[in-house]
Every structure is written in C-alpha cells, then in structure tokens.
Length: 138
Ligand code: CMP
Image (tube, rainbow, N blue to C red):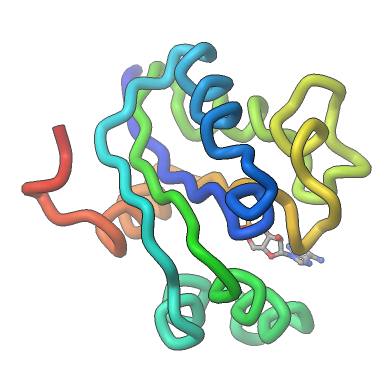
C-alpha cells in the first residue's frame, strides 16, 4: 500500500553539488515529495535525531559529520516507500552498494554515504515529525 519514508541528503552530497541529481533520481523512481527543507543540524539536534545509535561506536563521528554542513530533509510517498527507497539508495557502505544506486553513484564512505533512508514505517513517522510540522506536508 502507499506509505511514506523520510530521507536526508547528507552534508557530503550537498557539499559535492549532488542535491539536484539525487532529487531527480528520487522523483524519477516514482516517489512523490510530501515535504522538503534545506537546513542544518547542530550537534545537539543531530545527537537527538540519531539517539537510537547513541551506544554505537560510530555515534560521535556520525553526530559530528551530520552537523558539519547543510542537509536536505524530505518526506516521500510511494507504494512500498520504505523498502523501495532502501533499494534505491543501496547498502549503508557505498562500496557494497549495487551499481546504479544513489550511494554507489554519490557516496564516498560509510559515514559520508550521501543519503539517509528510514528503516521502518514507524521510524519514518518519527523522523518525518522531527523535521516537519503538519503545516509543512502537502
Ligand atoms: P544512516 O542510515 O543515516 O544511519 C546511521 C548512520 O551511521 C549510517 O547511515 C552510516 O552513515 C553511519 N555509520 C557509520 N558506521 C556505521 C556502521 N558500522 N553501521 C551502520 N551505520 C554506520
């Protein structure tokens, strides 16, 4: 059924000039944009967004990286959105991502991996609400 996912174009992909290409890949794959924002996380807001990872060894690097520059946040809608978006972006480690995926094309490392994609419907709703109010969704 039609559902929603949440994505961020991460600081590496923004700094490397890939916003337009990534949004084109997303919309060409059939995702409809429900909300869209160009913004920047602080260390505090990045830490809160990724709180689920706070015990992981990569947490501090992740928070520092995600607050290192502007990002693009978006809510996307499509049939089977969460799973299909994860297929579109490819594996977390871009060296393991399939040919043609967004991370294979635009990412350099497991930290600077170009895009985020929600891992479940529940997290998509939580993450979307972190960035967007009801008045910012169309
Ligand atoms: P993301 O999907 O945004 O969620 C957490 C991020 O942590 C992940 O993308 C990676 O960029 C980063 N990360 C760094 N090391 C790891 C790891 N070993 N496993 C999972 N994620 C990692």
